[in-house]
Image (tube, rainbow, N blue to C red):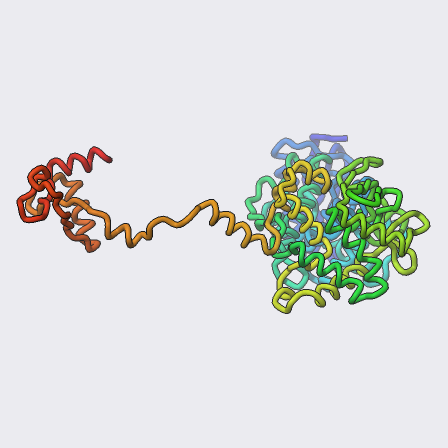
Length: 529
C-alpha cells in the first residue's frame, strides 16, 4: 500500500552500536528506520527520502521507501538480475548458446563491483561466474567447492544495484571491463561485440521488468571495436593444398587418419560444418556407383560440454542451425566425395546408431581428437612460411574453402547458400573471397580485359604540340595563367615542318610555319572548355 502521509525525524545517535547513526521516519502512521556506520551516510539517505517527498512521490507502507527507491529495492543487484536472466532463457537455448551467454555475462560482471576489497583472483572470479553462477543446471544439482562458494558470496555482497546502471559512469565501467581479457590485454573485436550483444539483451530484460523505462545503453556513447565479419582469404586453401592435406591424414596417423579422411572430405567437398559431419548417418547418404550423390542432413551434434547439456552428455543432439526440428537440408555430393564415402563404408562400416564417424571407442567425435590429427597433417604438408600464416589453421577452414570455391566457380549465390545452410546475405558478406592462389589468376584476367598497353606516355609527350601565344601578345588572364604553368613545368615552343605548298599554309618561305595568331587559338582553347 502506498501513502503520502510522511514525516521525518532528525538523525538519532546511539553509542556502543555497530551502526550508531539512525534515520527515522513515519509512513502512514508506521515508524521506519535505517541505521548506518557513519553520519554522512545517514544524512545522505535522509536527504534522498526528503527530496522524494518534495517531488510528490508516494511511500510504501511496508518498506517505507518512496516509489523511486522502491523500484531499486525490488530490482536487487546486477548479480541477481543476471542470474535471473540466464535462468529465464535456459530452457529454450542451445547448449553452446548457454555457455556463450555465461562467459559474456561473467566478463561484464567484473566491471559492476562496488569495491575491490577482499576480491578473489580474476581467474577464480571468472570461473565462479561463468561455470557456476550463470549455469542454472549446475547450481540446482551440485554444491560448489569452497573456493568457488566464497567467490560467489563475495560477489553477492559487492555487486552494484541494478538501478545504478542508469548512471553512465557505472555503465562505462562495465563496458570498459568487458573490452579486456583476464590477462589485461584488449579482447578481440568479435568477442567485445558478442559481449555487448548479451549485455544489451540482459538490460532489455530489465526494461521488460519495468526496472528501466528504456535500455540504459541507448544513452551512452561508447565506440564498439570494428569487426571484419569476413573470412580471411589467407585461411582458405586452394584445391591442390586441400587435397594434399587430406592425403596426409593416413600418413601422420595411419589408423585414425584413415578414418578421419572421409570426415574432413565432407567438410571440403560438401561444405558441411564439423558438427553436421559428426551427426552424419549412413541412411542420410545417397552414394551411387557413378556420378553425383546426395547428403540429406537431418541434424547437428555440437560439442558443448557436459555442464551445459540437459542430459549431461558431452555432445548435444539438435536440429540443423537456424532450422526447426525435423527440417532437413539436401547437399549434393560430387563424384570424388561419393568415391571417398563408399570406400569409408566398405572399410569402417557405421556405428550402431548409423553414424559414419566415431571415436576408437565408438563415441561421437570430439573436436580435441580430430583437431590434433589435423594439426599434424598441416605440419606435414605446409612449408615453414605457410605454417606461420593462418592457412588451413582449423578444420572449419575446409568449409570456407568449399564455399569460396563454389562462388568463384560461378555457382549462383542462392544455390551456394542453400547448400551451406544460411542466407545469401551472410554468404556474400562472409565467404565471397578468393581462395589461396586465385589472386594471380584474377590479375591475369584483368590484364586480358585491359588489352595491350597503348603508346608509352613519354613517346606521346614528344609528339604533342602545345600551341603558345607570342610572348608579347595580350591574352586573357586565364590563358596567361595556363602559359605560366606550362612554362614552369619546362615546356618550350614547338615548330612544325611546313607542308609542300607553303603559301597555302600561310608559310614564310623558310620551311617553317609561323605560330598561329593568338586570338584565334585562344578562342579555340576556351571554346573547348
